[in-house]
Length: 120
Image (cartoon, rainbow, N blue to C red; front, top):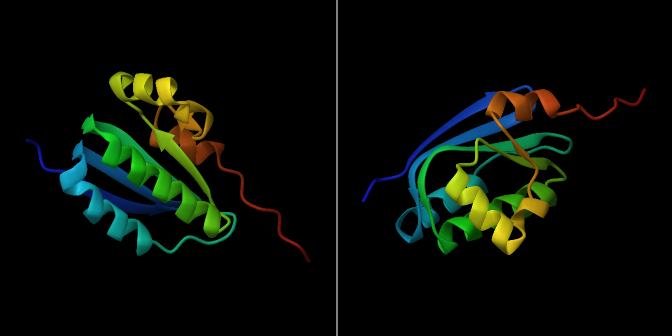
């Protein structure tokens, strides 16, 4: 068992959460609590970097869907970055590759973000 390590940083686009280890039943509640505490503003983007994920079970997928719902409730975007091939295959099988925009790196996800237009 590998514990989950979570690192959060803020970019001009919004928060980036980097997950390393096992995103599973044992770690899901902690990640869900972190997500609830995130300040997401309208027009911002939440990026979840999965490059260090070794396991993602159904509880992990549920956490990612909760993150998407949290972002949408805040009128923010969400993107996944560096999704490992084994996780990407699961996402494809259950159709989540159609739900989450994915990027090869967190930096690519940040670069793809477009700030909302400002109104005079």
